[in-house]
Length: 188
Length: 90
Image (cartoon, rainbow over all chains, first blue to last red; front, side, top):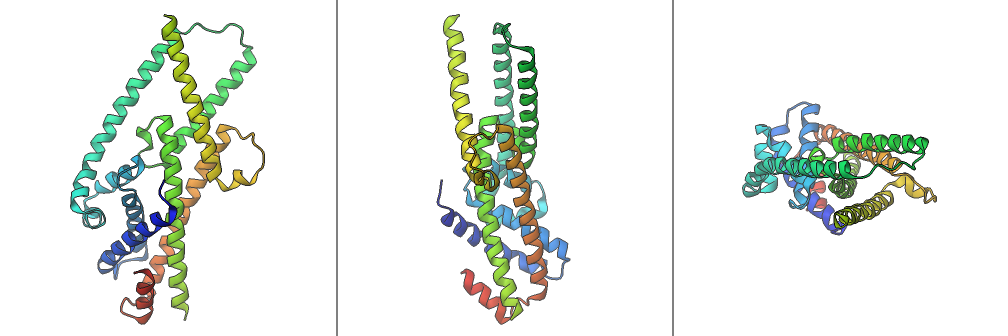
């Protein structure tokens, strides 16, 4: 994984550039509109800093591309070549879905052929199936939090979550520093 | 037939190890669990803490965006303060 300081530098550069682009259009708009623009530019800047190497960043950009209002911002952050590529990413996620369905069919066929264990205690079986259902529920929730999570299998989801958390932390660190610095300067 | 069964076992063994490794990496990232010395943290606990952590980070991003949005309302882009910020960044 890249060092977090180089990730932060990349993110900061892209974010500030996009804020400067935004600043002309957001002057005179409501606080809420400005906030949405700032948040979107921060998310896109971080996703773009991953340079298409992770599934969540591609999914985030693809989702943002669906809204035509974001086109100018995305093109500026990514470059128009990558913007076109990001639109193709939504097709890629459909392919992921097919792969997952094939895996599920395979898994099911293995399970059907397995000889059932008769020696297991009924209590242990219930406990383990409850635990499995619990984990499944948590995993579903995690899928809803990570961009593009619905299209990932369990292993990819874990790997993407690791990367996503590291990126989010870097994003929060940089944003906090900028906001605090701006507040300090504003106070004087 | 036996080769199929052993292949099936091999596949599940690799997956279990991978999962354990990923779960332990995730544990190291989570601040709450890291502070607890105990090694025995269930996978479902790790997943729960992960979800909470991601939600907190989302909330922080949201909050910081709001603060910056309010600040930009008060800062004039051409003012000397804005120039200081710009020089800090570039």
